[in-house]
Image 1 (tube, rainbow, N blue to C red):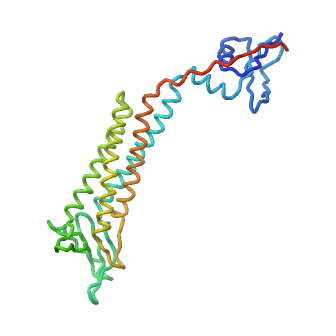
Image 2 (cartoon, rainbow, N blue to C red):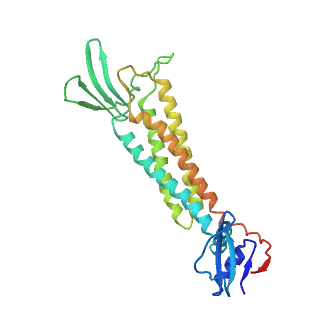
Length: 265
């Protein structure tokens, strides 16, 4: 005699796994899936939907779903932090703030200006001449205030370096998410990334409003990265806080017990 469970039930699937005389039959779109292992004679059949299998997995591995969601968010934060840090180091160290050709009268020269050095060469020449940014130097092509003052390179250097340091600290804390103190590590990482994003955004706005770069020279990677760093830090902060939140979801909701009816075939 073969007994069939007419209502999909994850409890049925669990009990069937423990019974060698029971055969599980899956249902998809309310249709029975053919199973060669079921002879339909002398066996108890357990008709189980795909959704019931998910509930069964949650019952057998109660922490699997929460762990998976937490690790996805955490891996995303770590990858975003690593990529962001590499891009930030390139931006802060290379002469890529402003580049192009500038002319004074009939004399033109190619320039490459960074946070720490300024390089120039006559147009058509291959010999670059570089020098460190002088103490108290103004931003290149800075707008003059009404009182005659100009924004300083020291301010830009301080804001940029502060943001990169916060990004580095966020990256270090993100790896703490692999330890037993994952929640607090992810929270601190998200905090550092959030503050770094504010610094990147404020620096980008400040530089944009306080300078006017003439053509054909233009902004280069160091300036563009300020906006990219702002977006990446926001993404990293969101992923870190999501991972920290998921640390509290170690136990999924208990599955509802469906009513079952039995019948004979």
